[in-house]
Image (cartoon, rainbow, N blue to C red; front, side, top):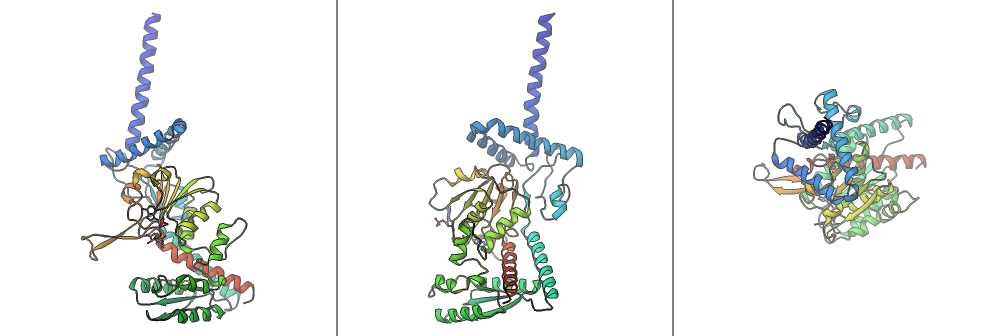
Length: 408
Ligand code: NAP
């Protein structure tokens, strides 16, 4: 009898173990995206690779996954399928993060993909906040407070003209007065410097922006240095960048694109402090200030660049990835740590004969792959791009407020 009892117990244990493994595998598959086997394989591969790489964290990680998956399952049981702008407190509160498209998987199961960080919607909210604040301050000051932004455009580049137009339109909508000087391609460096000096001295102007790139016969550095630091709303002045790098010092202005990238993380309630972050690219205007901003927010930051061998080695460790290298689809899905947050700064045109204009815009991250592995991701276009102008307007408002407080 005892032998039989022991046999039954053994069978029961084996059955439980079997069920456990099968359920876990099923859950893993059911929560991967879409009916595509490739997609499932991608996420599973990423998970497996990650587990191999972190031998000592292996159990912890697995537990984390199991908890995550169980949470997903429970949420589905409790609330039914997730739909955009419904479900999480975050999306209800801000209405900003739309859930990435969800395909039907076998049976009734719906799968989860990365949440889209909707830069367009977040930028719109910020622009609304700026508009309201400008209107309030104008009223409180009896019309004396009026922020002003001056944009200097040299040459006839179509893309630059488009950027300048949208910056001016953004000003108009926010109640910021815009000033503009257009100079021909043949203008001399001295002529541009004279315009900058004029705006430096003009009390109606609180921000000066020289649209880049400048014609090749001009010294970009010299012209940017000529902008008064109090009006450097682009945040490119070495003094502003230097202060950003120093502990205990605050720059007057922070470069708009990196500032917008970090703002996207913060407005999406993505924790930064204590997290590990990788910035791809080290340019003065995006990569380097982005890394400094993350570090100021207590992330542990690694910067990878064109001379970094095996950048994927670092990216796989990252909870946050900011990609700004200007190489289309550079960061692959299987380079990412499952559940990480991805901010794709890149804007690259790739040939696409199906499009009327013959090309389409893609980021520095391969979106189609990354969306299956990441927890949150910005699209291109519609991610970081709209934030750049919003941050420019915010910087101009900050500059105007400082000047007003100082009675200028
Ligand atoms: P950039 O000045 O050309 O700098 C690119 C950086 O990426 C450099 O630090 C470079 O490394 C690094 N890099 C290049 N190839 C690499 C590779 N294969 N592996 C790793 N790193 C590599 O470009 P940027 O001005 O920073 O702009 C970056 C991207 O952001 C571009 O796609 C640009 O269009 C986009 N952008 C978007 C906005 C927006 O508003 N959304 C604004 C600005 C820029 P090295 O330093 O070693 O050369």
